[in-house]
Amino acid sequence: MDIAKERDEAFIDYVKTGNFKKFNRYCKKYGVPMPKNQRVKAAGIYKAIQYCTNIPQDIKNKAMIKCLELGFSPLIKPFEKEGE
Image 1 (cartoon, rainbow, N blue to C red):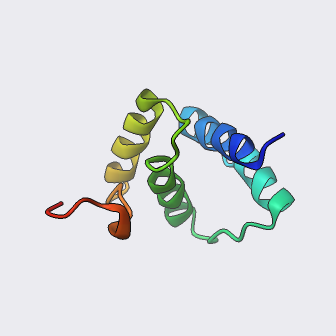
Image 2: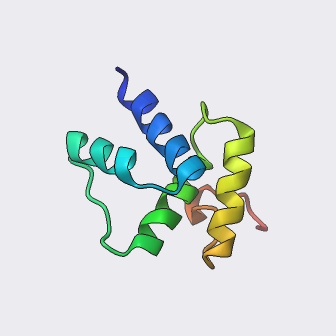
């Protein structure tokens, strides 16, 4: 399976279920380091989703709301448009 497709599936699963299990397996498989703090980890996933081209907009919208609810900006500064 394509690494980006696996990542997107793990991201979507996390947004839908709130369970890190599939995402943790993905990270372990590819050696992706993740923070131990669960809030920071979740916010990182929610932020990254905004820049994945193959994730449906409804999932991106849910991720954005969840990120804001955690108290984080849903966008990653270098990728934000000027004036945001």
